[in-house]
Length: 176
Image (cartoon, rainbow, N blue to C red; front, side):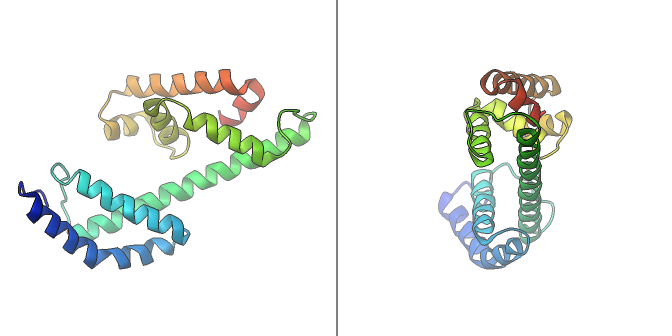
């Protein structure tokens, strides 16, 4: 697939896709919902195509794809687990405090949190989500993004600062 001739690369990619897609989808479906499994497998193949010239596969391409799909499924599961804990924490916070007038339901509050996280600048959001939702260290994130540890620290710090200013202290404390 790293061939300079794009037609040859596309043929190799198509052959790999045809040979592996159904099995990867079935594998991912054992861990996550069918819709999420489809998204994950498609995203893995898109990533592989976009990075075909630079990716260094040390195992068989099929084994590499299985590992990539498994890792993305686990990341999604972890993200959903953290999201569930945030929702639970919000429920406890709402029970303990007097009513928060801006939000009628926990779902509205979670939607607001999600919207604020989505509205962060892309670099800040990526570092923040990798740190808070995937549980990666600054060093791991730095290696994955190709930046320094201090850059990751700065991005997460700025994301938290922006979220604090937009959400207020009582909602921000749920994320920290």
